[in-house]
Length: 103
Image (cartoon, rainbow, N blue to C red; front, side, top):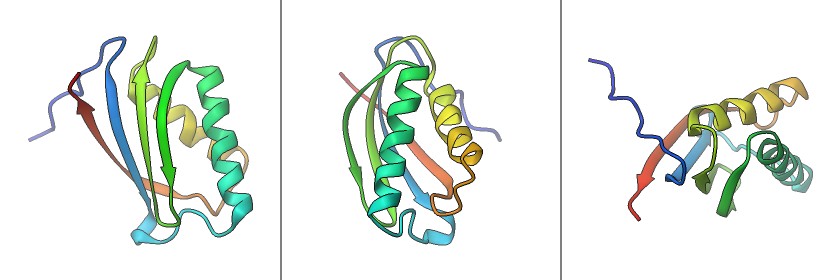
């Protein structure tokens, strides 16, 4: 049975977590951290959202995102595509867990 569609509306807040393939590290060094932050800010410029907080750790990330005009799925898609387009092999994410936050 497929999952229910994710709730989306402007102003919805989400706790997004992501981990690397087979629980491997997402980032290897300081340059990877900077690259991920750059991609996150670039995604924010292309598909505006409010980034309330983030936590980048070697093997996973946490983001608190509030949507404005685009559903979260589109924001995450843009973030992943930018990573692919720059040809990064170090920041490989295949698993995203998204929880809607109650206001």
